[in-house]
Every structure is written in C-alpha cells, then in structure tokens.
Image (cartoon, rainbow, N blue to C red; front, top):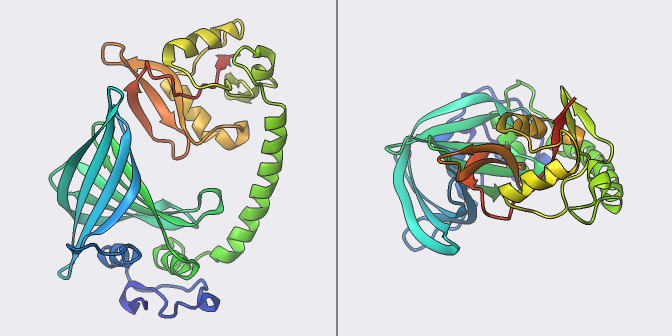
Length: 317
C-alpha cells in the first residue's frame, strides 16, 4: 500500500526507507485517519471493525468500533458496547454518528507528534487519535470520550514504516524524531526498569497484613509520603479504607486529586499496575467512588463495592 504525498506520507513501504522526513504540507486529518483504518479489514457492509476495545465510566465493559469511510471525506463511527451490569454482561448499541470539525493539538502524541481530534456529531463527545509507545510498543490509540465521565478506547497496530510515516506527518517539530533510534534508547530504559521491577517483586509483600513491607521505604512527593508497595490483593473501597488505617497513624487512601498526583509521578514512585486505583473521594449518595486507570490516567466514577481495585496508601508529613 502506498501513501499519498498530499498528506505528507513517504511513498515507499520498505523498512529501509522508514526514515524521518520533513513534511511541508498541512496534514489532512480525514486522510490520515482513513489510511490508519486501512489496516482493518472490511466486513460485508464495508465497515472496518475493531474489537477488543474498552469502555470505562459508571459501568465498565467492552467496546467494538465500526468505521464506515466515504469517498467525500466522511467517516461515520458506530460504537457497540457490552456492559457489566449487576454481575452480568449486556450488549447494546451505544451510538452511530459522523466525525466532524477535525482539529490538531500540538502536543500529547508519542515522538513529539500532534493529536487529531474531532466531534462525534450529535453526542457531545470527542473523538481522538494519537500515536502511543507504551512499554516500547508503537500503536495508534483511538478513543471517544463523553462529557459525563465515560470513554471508549482501543488501539490499532501498524507496521514500522507506517508508524514512522505517521510521525513524519504529525510531527510538531520540523525535524521528526527517528523512531528506530528512539526505540533503542527506550528499550535500554525498559530493560533497566524491568530489572528494578523484578527486584521489587522479589521483596514485595505477599499479604495485605504485611504492613511493614507495604510501607517499605516511603517515597516523598510534595507533602505526601507514598507507601513503597501496593496492597497485594485488590479490594473494595470500604475494605481499602480499613487496611490503610491499619498501616498506622496518618496512613489513608489518597483523595481524587492526590491520586492524580501519584499517577503523574508513577515512574518516580514505581510499582503501579496498569489498572484502576481507588481514591477516597465518593459521589452520588456515596455509592460511587472516583478511581484512576494508571495506564492512561483516565479518572471515572464506579461502584465502590466491587472488590477489584488496586490500593496505594499515602499520608501527609
């Protein structure tokens, strides 16, 4: 598959030509999104279906993205959701509408790239596409986020040449980064982090009552002391409050604001899972609690009685 020059892509798809190249033309958001979606096979109705996505919000679940691309620069998106409600999975059609009002944000993408946004027309929701490099894996992240604290998100795999071409096209700088070189540097960093994490796990607490090991050597972040380790077992909000207090005077669950501080400093603190962490902040007649997904930082309200959340204790010093 060759890419059109009028969106700034290189024309060759050979690996040896996957080089950073300056792009002088203004990127075309519709054409970039369309080219990325060509990695997804069409079904009988011409829809490009992405399964295995996630839905977060008051109810969590799975998402399926169905894109229809039209020649007159129109993309329509249908999202089908399977929600966990009262212990069972319910499948429903979430919404179907077109993407409009494309924009570029000059920060937030991997390797110094722009983010593409659009309105999901008629649903007060925002579409987003950006490049990511989580744990050394280069992918295209796609999401739909609503105003009432829900989000659907998924990832699309592209080959190395395509990814470099996307970096060339979406680069904020006039000199795009060389993905291959950056990956070598990041691989070295990941190897070091994995070695340190292995040591951490060997010394990690095995039980929620192993209080001394959970506290370990607390990490200072601002005016907070953060326990060195998570509690080994996930739990509900009520149980989490109790075990944090059991660590000793002043230890507790972080507030919603403090939890975000932990997320922003997660590399410095270390040891976090790519999963939901509990805060102490409750809403809506106290039945829902704010949690934060530590893979991408998204916060949402969820049922505080589910025993599925990770816990990291803090105290003020």
